[in-house]
Image 1 (cartoon, rainbow, N blue to C red):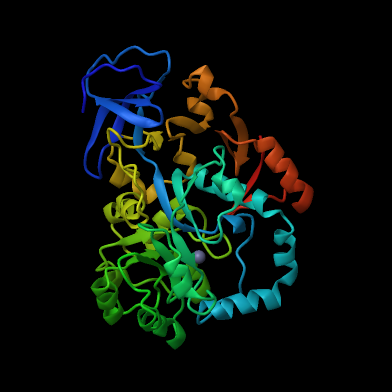
Image 2: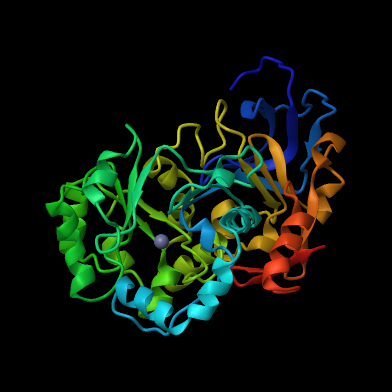
Length: 407
Ligand SMILES: [Zn+2]
């Protein structure tokens, strides 16, 4: 950490900072050009007109959502569970809910994915891995959150087409992400061997779900140094079964994804609470599964998931309740997310913190009403809501299990 005084774009002062799971100290974070340039413990930071006084608040790293389908952001949960595997589910919803599917598919994808970005932003996600082709909207500078790129992906063994070709097409140094073992029957159990036979199981592969992976499977995953992204609330909904964490925790590269609202309970914070309260995952492990672990698995290059000098200024602010970040994890939900910075810019701010934001950073923020709370977002909220309500109807826009409308 440097004590050289630089000209800073933005300074965050007075907040407790969660430098890692166990270390939380009051510090001043100086940001320039989107990166953290300095972290200082001095009592009197350099005065700056672009300063946010965060006394009484706690700064943590932006969260990383290792699995989502942004284009399904507006869908409700769909299914008549329990199913035995994902193929059964897919066939059943197309047979039983064609009108619902047609209704949400009538929303242009570039509109739907924007809501997917908003859903992630609201819960403090700053980087999301989207499973499906990247849309032009996601690559825009003004998209609400960062979307993983430079990776490869396939749907699954049964529905993924030519997976070896998709694997080969993965950019050098990128991760190959594919749904695997999503179910509880022999088909789901057999998929791990299927991937291995195709030489798709290796250090560059991240499997999504892995519900049917048993102890023998964990040994194979580890032998091949593959990673696993679990989405437990989705599994519980579809198969009425939870991933066995006592087995899966032996995979070193274990991370958490949110999956889409078609099957998941809510957003990434809902998913974190779910794995803590229903799967027996310790809060510290859960925290690492949305910070350090996905940064490594997804090959992020800018110290995402940490608060580090030289790292990207992707930060989330919650109220300081005088307990450490780990003790907060079992209770956090979108109501607690007061401020989100991505690349040093305010992307979301609560009404309570709005007055502390420098005028220059307030420009272009618009209020969104979400189930009774208001968040100011760097998103053209009014137009987004208007365009979506034109298709779905007034008051009919929901992301995850939450109603949204212009505030
Ligand atoms: Zn998925």
